[in-house]
Structure formats: structure tokens, C-alpha cells
Image (cartoon, rainbow, N blue to C red; front, top):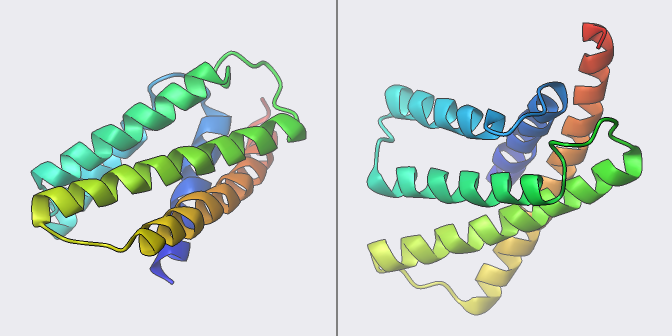
Length: 147
């Protein structure tokens, strides 16, 4: 249940922002602001949180840059579907890396089936849905902006 709120809403906001302001570094800035607000409001300034944010930013920025997202002039529906699935795959990878970090630093153990299910549902499915909703929201907001 928490994955729906965190995954779908987060990627809805991320992709809507990226559709409006398509430039390298926008994603990094958004995640940094999210990390700072989370730290100030809830006291989540931890080394693992910073490491997690850096992994997230590095993977997603790299995937978006390599896919040509920042260089595209027009975003078609088919291309945005590809980007949404790519973001979902990237978030599944980020989810796996973050779970491995928690297992290493906190001495936790998760079963392989749990990791796979968590990556599939929370990483790929929720993030892809949120990214698709964010693409639609971003295109509607772009019409309102008049660009």
C-alpha cells in the first residue's frame, strides 16, 4: 500500500517535471530538494539516505540521457511509453541496490522471492504507472503553460 503512494506519486511528479523542464540535472535537483525536505521535516539525514539518493539519481539520469530523452524535440506517446517502462526498469534496479545496501549495512536478510516480487511490483509496476500518469499530467500542464 505504501508503494502505491510513494512510487506512483513520486514518479508522477518526477515525470511531469521532466516533461515541463527537459534538461539534464532537473531530476538531480528535484531529488536533492526531496532529500533536504525529508531531512529537515522528519530527521532523515542519514548516510544511507544520501547514498540511496545518489544511486537513484545516477541510474535515472544515466538512463534518461542514454535514451535521448533530453535531446528529443517532440515526445510522442510511443516514445513516452518507452521512457515510462525504462524508468520502471531503472527504479527496479534502484530498488534492488537499495535493498542490498540495507541488507549490508543493517545486517538484514530477505528471501530471493521477496526481493524479486518487491522489484517487480514496487520497482517496475508502480513506477511505470506513475511515470505514465506523470507524462499525461506534464503534457496537460505544458498546454496550460502555452509552450
